[in-house]
Length: 444
Image (cartoon, rainbow, N blue to C red; front, side):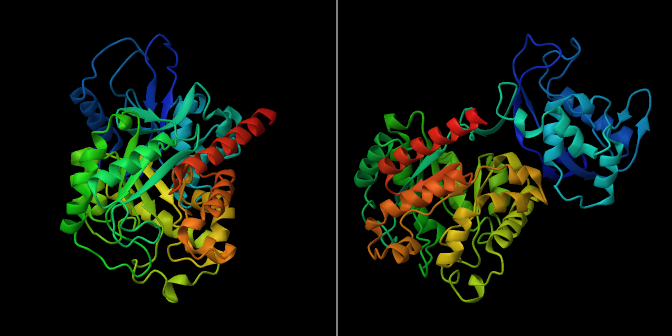
């Protein structure tokens, strides 16, 4: 589409859905995009049909199996009725698998005349929002017929089904909690084996310290630390069903790590510390964790970067800006995981506000993009300084009980991934939280 003069500006979430009309066929993947183009509506239709043919679509039974199906749902403010094109698409209103990703392209606040027009063209007096609610709305998501998924490794991850635990492997000599413990390949592999035994779903490997005032090493130095351990970890039999994330803000490190087999990129800067990062991630086709931080590790705790009038609202706004930049660079929303950045550019009270305000962050993002508001949320409070201040625990290793308390609060606020040092104890806390949330949903 991009090569054909269609500039994509927004993406919906990705949905795995049951087949409609002709049900004896495999499940479908559905999404939607917003785009800008100079092509007229019929020219656009012709381009989309060419793309379908180039991707292997040929004649077959109506609604039957096909590799790709591209439809024009809306075209600006126009209504079009010709022999070959009807806009708005005539079957939007009856198809939850179309309405769900279409809604993702909107914000809960109507932000343009064009979007207002789309609402007015719907068959419901309350616009697209009212129509979506009448179809079932969010209650449809997660059921057998329609699931939000994230493509990763060789499968589709239904990330809202259970909370994932990400174990931390620091290869740095100066990390605040465990600096210097795992710099050798042997020690690193042994620690990964322990975390996997404890129940970790993801191993996050970092070779660059991002603690406050940490000095920056080059991409080459980071790769020298990272690659031997990454290769050894990926070869471990225990990693067969697990995921490996690489914690880096360098595009060259991200590229080499994915080429070696890493499954995710975790960027504390959300693309702000390397101008090539977002384009690189787009080309790598892996999930991207975008974290909120102001400045860099040497400046993030400066007085200017700690100024908030409403931390949840401002973190949400700044995270949305990072998502917008990523999407314009070619990273689809369905590959983005959001991290509000606990401990980065935050005072103790800010961290507490975020832990208790995750629903607020989602709702604030939703004003601008429902797709981004549905993204998986990752939190990383593990052994952070604010926990030590609250509990009077100056040693980072003594903050695990406080970590469990903050992880619990985060999960009840909607966190989907928790990043921790002590995997075993936090896995138990996650299992209890998930069991409680499941029981609450049954009662509702």
